[in-house]
Amino acid sequence: MIRDAFVTPTRAALAAGAALALTATVPASAAAPSGGATAPTATSTAAAPAATPKRKSAPRPQIRVRTERAAGLVGRSAVYAGNVARHRSGQRVRLELRGRSGWHVVDRDRIAKNGRFRVTTKIHRIGDDRAARLRIVPTAGAKGDVERVERVHGFRRSFASYYGPGLYGFKMACGGRLSPGTIGVAHKSMPCGTKLTLRLGGREVQARVVDRGPYVGGREFDLTAATKARLGFGSTGTVLVDR
Image (tube, rainbow, N blue to C red; front, side, top):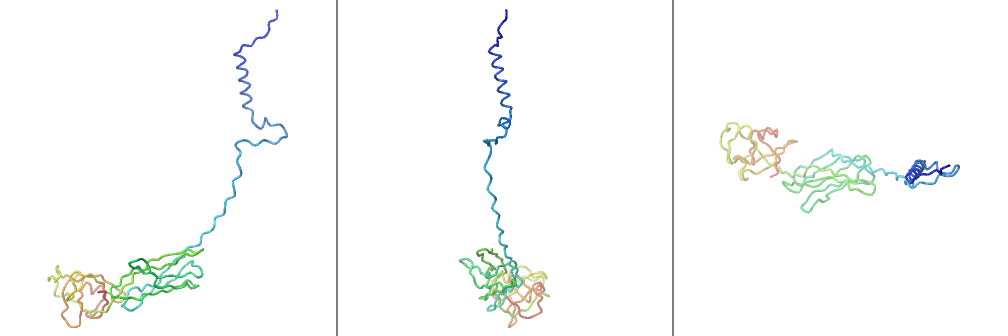
């Protein structure tokens, strides 16, 4: 007797699962009909826009100060001069001084073709001590620059002498004992400890009032030997002082 073939439900399920697994492993391209265009997949993206070319930034000008005569006698001019590298036509250099309410323009100069400039300001008073800067203001298509420079400083002339040898070890009127290394000046009335600046030629010394004197007519200050040496001062003569 011939028996009919019989497949159990379990075997049928296994056969169906194997068929599905084989179908999943077939590449999408293989499933496409021959000669036909391949359909776009879900992972395809739109083309990225072209990058915008970057603009070249304008070069920053650079202030180079060649002359700084910021300190001088009252009534004279403080002078700042030099040149500007990488400047644009029509740009200007401004001299600004700092006051109680901020920076104020006191002079300006158009930068020459060769980059040169020169600005000045009057020294108004003894001890005039204002912060100064040079500034190129940025404009459309041109950058700016700022350069801090020497402070404006006012001096007056004073006739002076010096003292020291033969007096080393003696007490000074403002305290302490005089020595070959003492930096300071003697004055008849300025308060002890008063700070002042002395100038002679291209030299400058910061000193204090440390003693009383001089007691010779026509002389306002007595410089200690160490102060005299730093200034390159002689025995008597004129010095510049900011007090």
